[in-house]
Length: 378
Ligand SMILES: Cc1ncc(COP(=O)(O)O)c(C=O)c1O
Image (tube, rainbow, N blue to C red):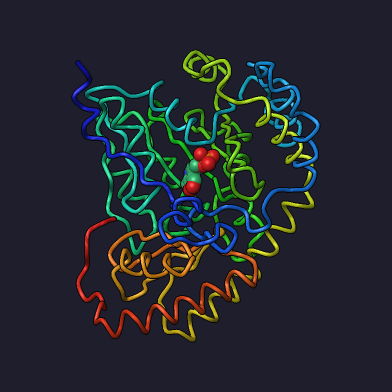
């Protein structure tokens, strides 16, 4: 026996791990460049590494189930009361817990097409339906999302900045949207790439935590991750701010030890190292400009990004391009038809990406692998 609706859920195909590619193609792991999962181009903060070394001998002990120190650190840094915080095993875990808390058969969650696929996954796992409103040139169409709300709608998933497109919506659009959403419908604003957008002078987007703290929207949940700018993707820490009564519900779903001891130690150290985050953001903003220039020279169309990745239209079947680049030790992420997502790296990484892309382009052109038609999502 199993719940039949689980069969509607696709298994998640994560960005290829370096170890897999090394094995498949007989390459040295150290020679492989992974630009597929939007990890931190500078790696991990040395302060985090130090904190982990000091904590490693304590791993025989269970983690602190209450995440006391980490919650207090977040509370202090962001001005959110401790009772309004939930820490998860990555924000992916937070997404699943929100879905379990709010959705079930007969309910609907609304989101956009071309957004983070885990919203769909978490929604379908509860037996609820997901409604994916068409995007507007790879941007959320918030008006259409609001218009899609009906009596079955319980929750709306919004990513701003969005993955895989890198796009944002404006504060104005967000406020208009919120004014149309009934207060019994949750709005989950996922800001995994917040640090890159808030430091980009060209970004007009809603600062979720500021809206949350203004207390103007009692149906707003804001999510953050420590996997990107904070550089601890491998340890899995994400968190959300939500009304205390809802936190009390979600804490009944969370396993006591879902956030490991080392993850908690690393997250606290990462939150104390502002300099590392600043360096990361500065590098990403500069390198993104460098990559834009190169893509312009190559005649590759891309969407302006407010994240640490670029969503680009390569003109080649994304999977073919991905395989050909992988054979040369560079892992990118095919997304849809000839659209590919590439994480912004350090200068030497980006130079290697451009060089390998040019080689592969010549190879695929020779094989006449140009993609003319719109393909299916991959
Ligand atoms: C929009 C968005 N939300 C959430 C996540 C998940 O982050 P985490 O690693 O904290 O689970 C990602 C990861 O890529 C993301 O792009």
